[in-house]
Image 1 (spheres, rainbow, N blue to C red):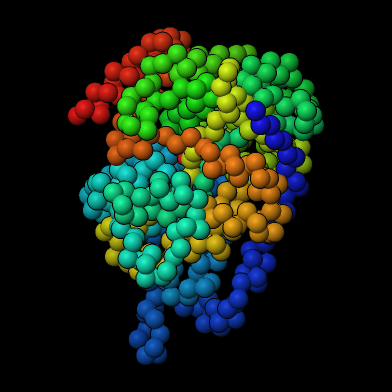
Image 2 (tube, protein in one colour):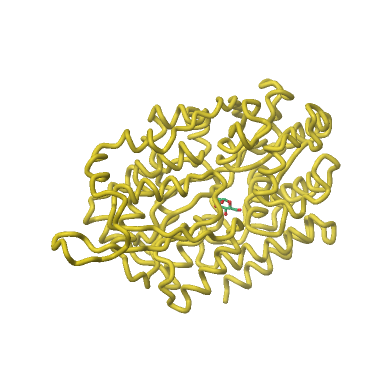
Length: 442
Ligand code: GLC
């Protein structure tokens, strides 16, 4: 069993100007000036036409999105990027995109897509195939972690470029828990959260995501997989009704109903977790890598310098498991500016863009080489940690299917009822099995 803990170093946040200064071609970009006020003016024959593209992405509390747009615009004076903020809840964003794209709307050109969407969006013909752009620009897809490329591939074609990757992590307060006390099993965590709750001004022992939404599924998969269970296997067989899966669900029920989580844990998403965490309210928390960045924001966080992270605990007789998350960049099939849209996608998902996301936003790169980059390593202790990189590569994917949203909805309903004590873990597993099988047969 592996345990790795690492204190998150004091935030080293590179300013945007430092980043920009570091990239060559700086002067070329700046001399055309920030004065291209939108008039497409035809007077200077060779000037490229000014194009505005709309980029939709979820609420970003880290500031990385603005930094990405600014850096791109600086280098591409003829392209303006308008940012449309989407809901933080991935499911809510998903539904808005489906409404937009199924009516063939061109209002959004580029959008960030959760790793669970590309199969569905490709099949629904919402997304532009990117292979011809990838080939024309000679993008080496082998520089990316293979799992992240696979998430964007459907029937052999690439519909999405990997932007950053996610895996669930256990955060802990280093001023309350010493490195050798960090729990390695769910039972140890249960015990430690109960005992340490209240120390160091905290109110809660543990924070997690238990609201009825996609994030709850990512938490559930960690409980299930760490007990040796699965939902759908490699052969697309529904295997959710197993003793291992039931043990995982039961452990999740125990945590949600403990007295060391907030009494309103059933309404907790990542945002609530992050807010309570940076407010110094908890000893342990489960969240994605970005919370290392918000944790160490000296202005907004009360726990800066006191935050460590470790792999999530193992189940009884099981292993550690982190759910694979992450975001891709895609282009709306009906975009009126596909070439400019591609330029922006290429920038965000290329080395330079991913470095901005990592340094400014604590987002884990999908390009393996960036973990060797000293600025990336200096920005966040997590990225300099080899075991974290291993965790990312071994993270457990959610079922890859064009009907994934259906599968997720079924699980969400059953798990919510189980967490609320309305049905047992056994009943939840049996119901999921029957309903997922029926959905797959349709
Ligand atoms: C994160 C993950 C994403 C997941 C979501 C759930 O954004 O990157 O894959 O679906 O959290 O809330």
